[in-house]
Image (cartoon, rainbow, N blue to C red; front, side, top):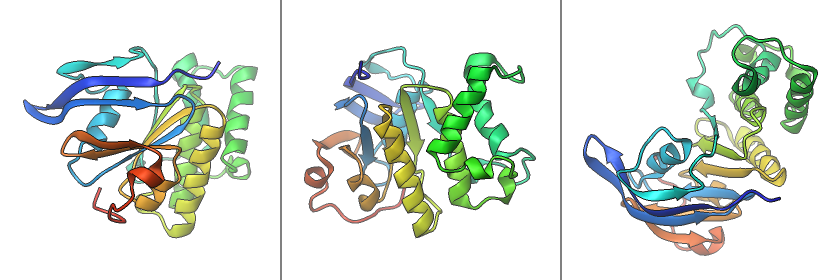
Amino acid sequence: MPPPDIRIAGVTAGYRGHPVLHELSATIPGGQVTALAGPNGSGKSTLLGILAGVITPSAGTLRPEHVRPAFVVQHSSVPPTLPITVGETVAMGRWAHRGAWRRLTRRDRTIVRECLDLMNIADLADRRLDTLSGGQRQRALLAQALAQESGLLLLDEPTTGLDSLAQQEISEAVRRAGDQGVTVVYATHSREDALRADHCLLLRDGRIAAQGNPCTVLRGERTAEPA
């Protein structure tokens, strides 16, 4: 069965009494890749936070309610001296099922290998994370998230700070995840990145300015704005 659509209805949310999203309503198609586009301050990160379950709306509904998402942090968020390998990094994704530091089962190890293969980093499994390029680290973090076997994958500006080759590698990795039937949602300030998605939500001033096919939604939008 394909994963269900995520339906957002009349959501208002913000920080310390300052609203960022205003009665926002949208549909995120299940099993597809959706880009959240829009200028700085439009509400992209806030919407991701709501989908991740770390921000509670002050009004509105989100259906289905109880989805355990996998969230991919930016590669720059990883401490540069963290002394773990790529394989260990991806295996940490199984903690959602096994708990921290518990011995992996045969099935866990199989899933870890599959995620390494999916992100084309199986040959890096024994390399320390701090010896990799930014793009390689980002793919390792994406593999870690996929190892959680969540039906919802969230990414916040996954290509920020990467060179053009690494950006293309991450975009292709995100596409492969979507091709596996995972619902993928990522925030981006890059028009080019957003055009690679199946679906696009264009946010402006905390509201949906347009949603649908990225080519249609982004027609006439500026190429890029600060994140």
